[in-house]
Image (cartoon, rainbow, N blue to C red; front, side, top):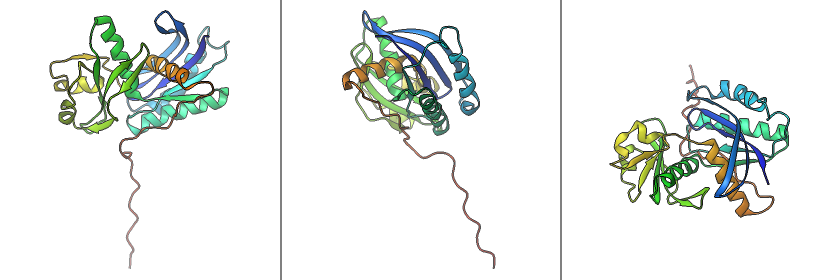
Length: 239
């Protein structure tokens, strides 16, 4: 069965696509129908609505109903992650379709294992993505079949030097490895991104198939620290 999905990632910049997904010869097969991207990590609110309208109006997309929306749930900087999830929920309500969540690091790990498979080796990956404040979001993974991954750690926000000590992996993936090259520690750097909307679809469909009919993947944001915005302190009393 082929399903039509909108996948949204706002882990760093904004990236979304519309794709038809169904069984392939080796896992899930994707046919990307339209996509849009912008690289700024500070323009999510201004860009996501226009980008979504553009991909939904593309030839071959507008005349067919959607089956689901998939969104990255982080960890990622607060403002961008929130904008992506709000966009996904609004679209889900408007079209009457379920909204599923996939952790951002899981999608990066899946993209990295795709590269490893093409290169012919490697069983574990350290994913490190930009968390700002000279820190990274980090977790280790191993592949789970052709379309999913299994985390070996809970995701954490770490200083790069602390992430280096997460050893026992064959490769490093994610935008953090580009910002802090010493994280690679002599290992190859793969999938230098903070999210991947195509990989999100494959991960989500595998997990939904395992969970059974009617399942919904949680789409709550994964925040590993408080937002950067703070309420101002109240004025002191004047006598």
